[in-house]
Image (cartoon, rainbow, N blue to C red; front, side):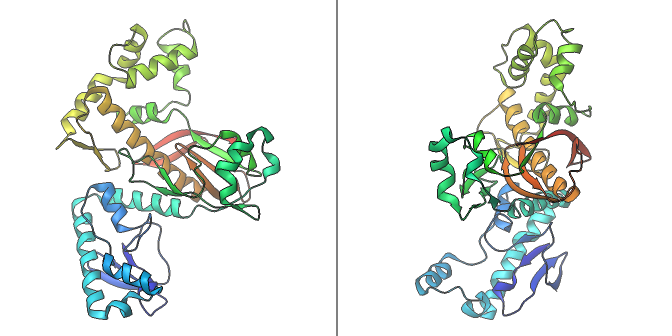
Length: 356
């Protein structure tokens, strides 16, 4: 559903559009997209799928409102008829999106965007952080800390080629020292286990593994090489140049890498491919394992985010930071045990939960 928020009208209700029907609502459901700016916007959704979209409010109106220092209901500022024309234009973009792409996938991405938007500022205690990290505290924490509360990161899902998150405001938790996480009192992390190898497995109709490296070490190498060597060989098998050692070749065979690359090459169109969740990935000429890497990274990024959305519905938590395939949070009530999360498309992937 497409939502034009109440702030655009002289009303307390939002205008909701879907399937050719209009209604008014006091709430915005998780799977809605909005005609406004921000991560839940229609423009961001269109970027994910590679569709064209323009902002609801043209730049000249935005600039004039800034000059005047006002933020009026746009239906009054622009005029009802002009505003209705702009709304109809948004509806056209939305209809084009939903007519072309799978509604189930649009819903998944809308729920992801809702979840990211729902992240909360964190109560942060500097006394819990190692004093040797003062330089990191000064660069990453203090500029965003007020009265013991750390502002939430502002993320974008469309800045990188694969859709991995970028921080565009607030504390950059993606680059900060891991020791700074200790400042989150009673904080926990939930992380996907070997998410990219497991995404590859489930995309082939195979079962994900709680410890893929243990499986490879035991089943392929009969415990004759170390776990560290298995991990290195796995990275070479999935992402290397294709000239890895004999161990990497054996792992390539286990993951059916050649078959998967051929499948992906057949799905490539106009130098682009869609990940498992319909996101359009620009390849810039990538082929072979580079193509596989882009598809895997993009699919895994969206799988993790949808898993975190489902985790927030399954367990009563306060979510604070997303760090790639991990979520930093605190429990509100009971610490419900979780060992796998629904990542959509009828898949569950293994996770581990740890105290910070």
